[in-house]
Length: 164
Image (cartoon, rainbow, N blue to C red; front, side):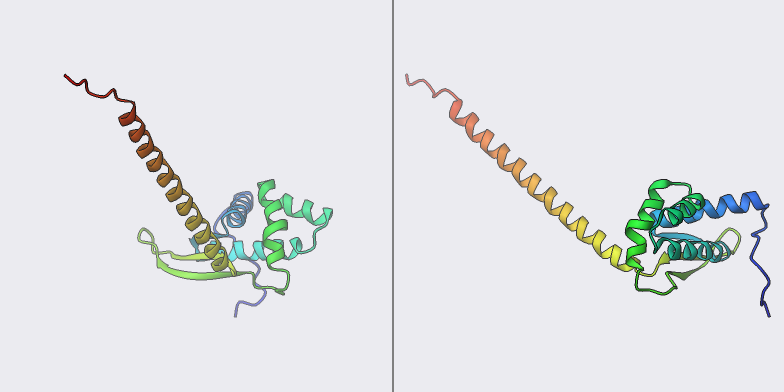
């Protein structure tokens, strides 16, 4: 059994491992979904869940602790203002791991690590895309209408043919 065996050092020196995890956690909160190996995903999940739990209580102390574990202050702000409020009623289990299969190069197991409510975010993104497409269609229609109007003005500006 693997009880109380600590953590996975990921075959890296401690400074490299800490930098890797900070970078991956920062990217995870920025994108809310990342693709990585299973071992790294488990390590990132461990750190990310602790940070989300801490971000659920918005205080100066918690903001400083979270900021010390992330590389980007904007991502820390996003964690407190966007992600943590969505997880307010959830007592834990903020992330999910979806298996993708083996990587062709070295056959390591690849997974997707994402926030549990990522599907809702994707739905909002689709709505934004639809609104953007509708706006582009209106803009294109207005440009065509303007083009037709300018053609009509050119025809009326032409001098009439002289009658001989």
